[in-house]
Image 1 (cartoon, rainbow, N blue to C red):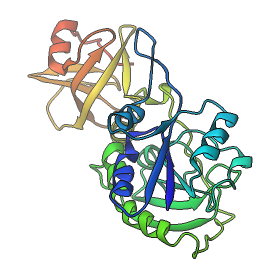
Image 2 (image 1 turned 135 degrees about the vertical axis):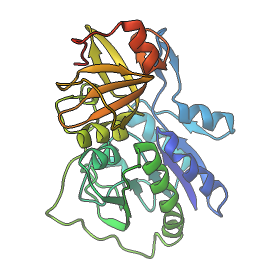
Image 3 (image 1 turned 180 degrees about the vertical axis):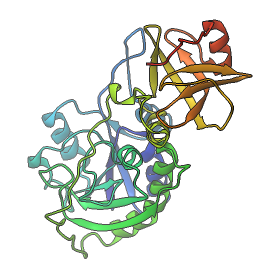
Length: 305
């Protein structure tokens, strides 16, 4: 079958590789247009586009509906698979390919519809999640479902780890579905039980230190990769890396209080203490938490806010 994949994320690489190794034909990868990146705001393709072009794969970067339509008319895919594409497909294009568009979504729909289902599953303290493969319609993640599968979430799972596991689990089912797509029917989603998983903002990644330790560690697991957790210290934004709960004697009294104990940078939450392994001060290189603490010359009033 002639396929295209619409994605703007590296998470789709294993899917692309699996299709290339199958009996199907990958006509093109549809991704977002180049945009300004970095401090110099140089116009560059996204990481998936760079990878695909290095592999010699055809890459399309339609900027609008008309460009996307022209690409589809030229490439004539029979089925388009979307995964973390980040754009709503115009309804007038959904019926172009013979078998339409299907989406691999990383939740058990109708729960966690939206851009960040894995991050929200971890943030919410869910003990399980899963993936759903469904037929695109005019709504946001509302189309009928071909198949879904549940997986457990462990206390060690981060967003990248859970995304990788879900993708690897979904690939065999996705390939099997492609082979029978014209002979199987999708089931409408339940009318009740829908929840949302909107895009995570940078402000949402700021640690609130008067939260319980469980909440703080869930933020770290869910958001440390993207957009990156952070806090304020003396009016400066500090990125935080590698949080873990510790049981060690300390003099911390209030949430946000900071203390260097030996080589461990400790911070008080509402009910416990975390060690911050590394930090990245604004405009500086990543460094050990202890080195930051020594340079900051902490005193009894030092706090993360």
